[in-house]
Amino acid sequence: MSLGSALAATTLVTAIPLPANANALPICCTVDVGTLDFGTGFDCFDPMSETVHRPFPGNAAANRKLLVDAMRAGGFKNYAREWCHFTLEHEPFANRRFDFPVTAG
Image (tube, rainbow, N blue to C red; front, top):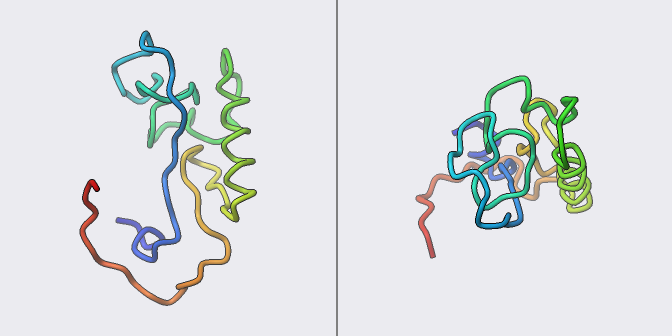
């Protein structure tokens, strides 16, 4: 876990379902099933993951811009080397560490 994640200020985000025929293999340079096309899979550590990486076919660049704009409107700043990585700019618990298990509802 990164320091930002331990402080509860950092999150990794992806969004919005695709049709059922989307790629079912969530590997680095393919679209994760069930998400919009962002040009790479979620949390891919490759130069293609850089938020403004170009060129991308289809809607990947527009989808990244849409995500960044939406997260920025919510007070988050994008980490430029990963399109899915955002940190809350004005974190309400800046000096508090969180350590708890995360479980499904």
